[in-house]
Image (cartoon, rainbow, N blue to C red; front, side, top):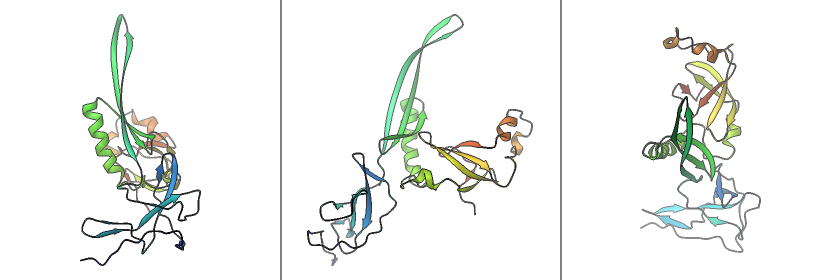
Length: 219
């Protein structure tokens, strides 16, 4: 049997200097820090796994009064909002009713990314994307992820680029060529005039969750 025992924070407990994780935990609109306090196990899970993670409001100093036990599976609260709309469209002499649908992935209650399509497509797709978001190199579960990525060097179609901006609500980044004048047209589109203007731009808008020609790691 495990010799691990439960030990909670008490009123006379001397709280050590804590180094919080970068997890972006928000509870009812209020941001919290999370840190491990060695020796203060509040839960033993499964096959004897000790949990010594504690949380407290970011605008306060950790104390007996504000420390709470942390047992979340994910620091960020990811959610889905599915919406349908109806509208009238006129084209030439025809007037018709049309519909549109979108599933919005939310991050701590704030719109993060849209997946367009009916519920049979967009809802399952959004659920899959939430799983991928947790493993993404841009670390979307961390505090200030949108600021930390600015200046990150990447490869786009094997060409050097650098992230200049993050577009909130779209999970997109603006990427500028780094050390080159512009991004070259990929060989498979060499004779496609549609790519002329796109590759003359000084910045490209790239979808973080859909662009498959990005290597997020460049020295």
